[in-house]
Image: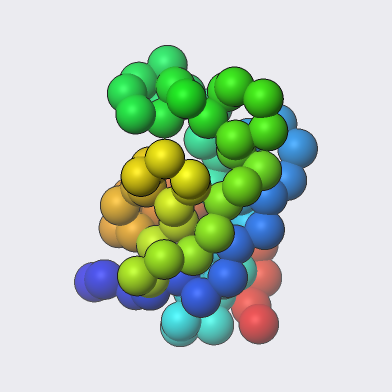
Length: 81
């Protein structure tokens, strides 16, 4: 099932808090992805902190994004909206 992300909040240690359209708030840890292209660029400076929602998923400047299905399936439920 494809669920859009409606809000992202950047946390310490490369964690994203994600609000999904179904009312779930979930935490996703990006650490395992940071040695892979294109996400390796997120380790530079403050690039990771520039996360924003675009087309229902999380994106960063420089044309970097991540699949919303991955974000949902590999995140942990932390609450509801």
